[in-house]
Image (cartoon, rainbow, N blue to C red):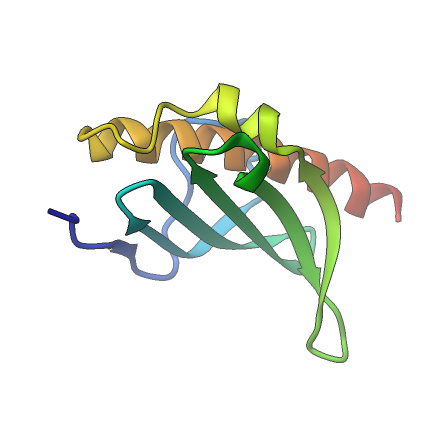
Length: 125
């Protein structure tokens, strides 16, 4: 049975998983797309920009991906940082795990890593 998606309302500050203190978590959605795939999407305000982090953890490493993107003035997403499938695969438990809280926490830690990289890129740009 697929667990219902977790949706956190806008305006909540991040807790744990990272040291990005100037980030404001505006929206978060965690769901199981299929028995073998879990999905996390977060939208943050960071350094005056809107940054979206998307992570997909599939049972096949080559189908896993993680990326952070910034919303451009023309309302398109520009990728700032990515993680390769094997790195996502090794950082997050098997998607077949029944422990949704553990999967969510592991994916949130991975999202914090990407957000930290995005913060460095945005401060340099």
